[in-house]
Length: 323
Image 1 (cartoon, rainbow, N blue to C red):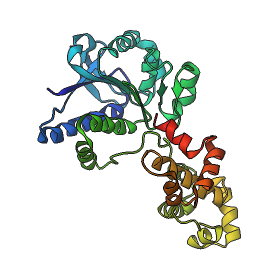
Image 2: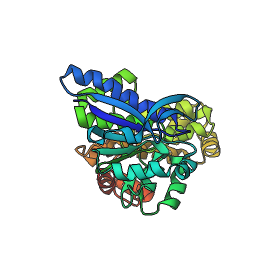
Image 3: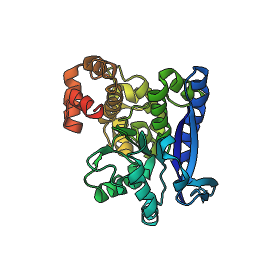
């Protein structure tokens, strides 16, 4: 029998929050069937059924929540909306339904700001969760008992899954497919959709590369890419970086600080830190090996950097993100 996945929609829902994960499950069914495993059957539901318009304008036909046979439902997924605070006010019966149904299905998940609806339903109290980076402060103010992880693409806490902004719903769905159908099926889906098989769950929502691009410093974009590709080198000195962009070391250091708000050394360290955080997702990879691959040179130097940035050692950080 297929695993039934229900997407819960409402007016002003974000289309990609729903369409991305749905496409993952649709593609996974093909590869699962090839291997004699059950695939997925996706359903689109709303409080009262009928057409529901996404915030982008597309209208989708839905069935009413009370017509679903919950005995057959495996997974419930709640997409987000840029207007989620108003949605929560207008959707009391939907929130009540979520509070009840979560105990009857195998897993309940949210994409992006959909976490607000799970939190309103009381499902996230005392649990670790995440949501879109732009809503983190508001979420924390409204739900202080939730262990909010600001540096996560998605979080699994028992049978509850939450993901960060928009496209991270694809990462969450791929992780579910891997748990259900194995690595091979999930990898084939990732290849078909031309996405990464795994962006680690605790990878920062905003990467250092994205942050550097948002600062409007195109003169250093090529340099930053080169740094990321050469992090294992310990000798990323000001002189070497300046030579890459055809500037004198003194002028480079001045312009780099002016444009990025960081010294070149701090810029390199942030890229090293981001790479190390991703590699620490692999529980079997030795910390000293990660330190060398990221250019710290020694485990002790990486430990000092982690303590300075996070107040945790690399080993403690690994335990935190893999719990």
